[in-house]
Image (cartoon, rainbow, N blue to C red; front, top):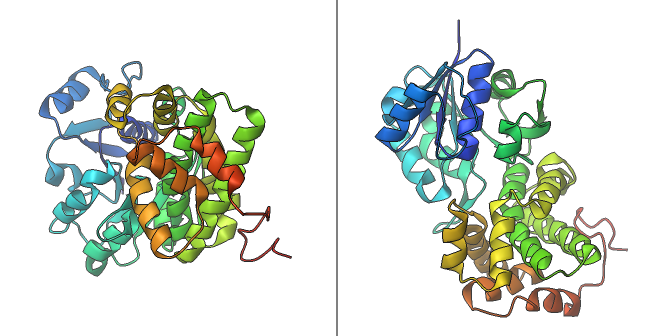
Amino acid sequence: MNKKIAVLGGGSFGTVLANLSASNGFETSLWVRDTEQALRINAEGTNTTYHPELKLSDKIIASESLEQCISGADLILVATPSAIFENIVKRLKPLVKDNMHIVSCTKAIAKNPMRTMTEIISHELETVIGDQFGVLSGPNLAKEIANEKVAGSVIASLNSELKALIKNALESEKFKIYESADVKGVEYAGALKNIYAICCGIGDKLDVGENAIGLIITRSMTEMSKFAVHKGANPITFLGLAGMGDLVATCTSKLSRNFSLGRRLAKGDSLEEAKAAIGQVAEGVRTLEVIYEEANKNNLPMPLVNALHKIVFENANPNILMDDLISHPDHLDVEFAGGIGNE
């Protein structure tokens, strides 16, 4: 029996995911919020807002109706901005069936209460779908995938059927998917690295040098993994594609929204000016607020997070990023792997 894939979110990544699925022969529906956008995708076979150069498979059917989009779906990929993620999942509650599998493709942490995207899915839908949920994350710059550059991603779930389904739906000659059971680790890695991409964007614009960028990236890895272990994740996950792979790609690419945001902040733009110039959601700002509060509440040393919070929300001079990092009393190099390197 043919499987149906539903992708929720007609942004840059959602569009690419839908095209991968449809190109693999799956019946694919793409939920978008704008009726005109849906009509244009169906009529012209392009998403002119995000990937005007990408010819979409004719197997993609775009719709503004959430109910119509997920009807009969075996796999639902949620690729919406975090600001509407919880609302979308709540709208799914009366619509999902017990045979459906749901995967978060949104790299963010919710606030009040602090929850990952899969924790929102589990909280709202576990009575219906059980463990049939997971997260897809990795160095997945959508423009490169759209241009058929080689890329990889990680599907993290406790459900083996879900992992097989998503690999069948999305893998191609140029897109490889690896498996993990560490849902928390993969999810925190994807969300947290957006913070540090902003830091690297600031460093890049300030011309701190390649050595300093290497310092920022490795200290970012330390902060990320220590925070995630605090939340129950496996630190080894951060050495893989969803951790180091995504961190390096996002912290060095001008295709990254968060990296670009950092460059604009260092140039002197206000936060609102920087966000407007980018024109798409940079999740690192929302995640920064959440992580800053949690780290300070639990006395977790995160000098890069603290410095970036001053820059973004307190109008501090961007030069404090390197000053605060160098002056911090940290003296150990590798200290994120559950104590390894502490001797």
